[in-house]
Image 1 (cartoon, rainbow, N blue to C red):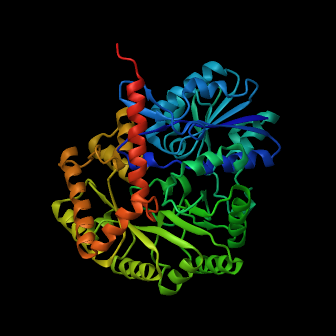
Image 2: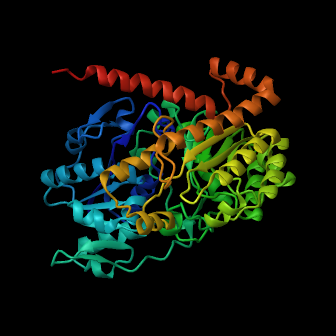
Image 3: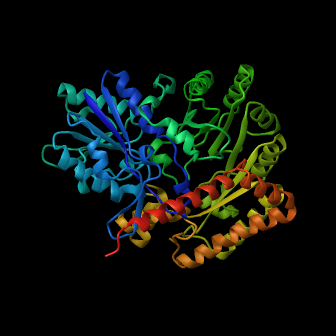
Length: 512
């Protein structure tokens, strides 16, 4: 069958950290390789990668701006003879514009089967099918499911037998099939089909998830997370099964990316890469044996339990340079409520080991959980100061955001009547926006929460640079000479670039 995979445009704001990230879409690249391996023809339209500096206003009355190709340009690039159009949507904040794209897609291609996958399709399949002309939602991992869908469509077999999909039956009713079991052997999945994507454009744009340390490419070494944080969508999307690839195959993929695209810096986008000590030790030893001058990072963060002096030294010797710990809160009570199974003292010990070895660390916090009181916030402020004292290099504090299909979302739905409307979806984009943090706290408004988050940054960086003033000098010099070794320099540069792009786009709009 003829399949076209689409990465839609992404929301952008000159003050939003997420907007500074532009990386090749791993999920679609894996889907493309799986469909090709099954004998199907695959085309790709990467609306972001094909127009990284194109900013345009999505006119729906909410003042939303998008990065990437406009809808008409996307539709023009789709083969008129395509049988299946697959759209990926990882972040629910993008649902309103993607919904409009799907509607225009149906008008242009009435015969094609439209499939939506990603985190949002898994979280809200009933809403997706009710509000858009989507024919199928893929729930959870997509590789095996997509191949089976294509087999059903090509042979006429009923979709009722396909695990892990939501669809409409002949009566127009939504049917949610049983969940598909997680893929046990990740090594059987073909490598991402990167030659279908504008990889060189992304590399030259140099706006990865982590720090800019060279020609970077995203990768996955593991899938899933064994933990069940109440604010995270991972338990619903991936279950709590953690799977790791064969370490040798991961290294061979790094070598392949180096030989094919000149990649020298690898960003592992795993949910929780370091879970099993034996795996990370084996990976590092094998990478050291190969003798490559690669660097690698864990920009999404990782757990601390497996990282001690020995492991940290191995990681540095193998090329690891940056990662983060997501503490989330300094309140032991809050950590228990949100099911964040960490012990702060153990995190501190692990962080000291990592920094002694030479790894640059970021620490992440969240403020605004609905149950929080000023006592909880004070505990977090104390922990932020402690992290600065210990020597963490970078800091991030975001606003609590109730992602759909999470425990936190269901609690707010029950207690405050939260509904998945367009304003709610757009609010999810604000959790990392320095001028638009949104509060879901019953007593704290947006302004109060923003002030609290600004205070958090002042506490950490104020104390950090007071204790180590040479860091401020070094960071300023590194930024000015384009040699920044951390996320902060990339963040500042990315926000300034986005500000210029959006300002230019606004000026180009004719005034009536």
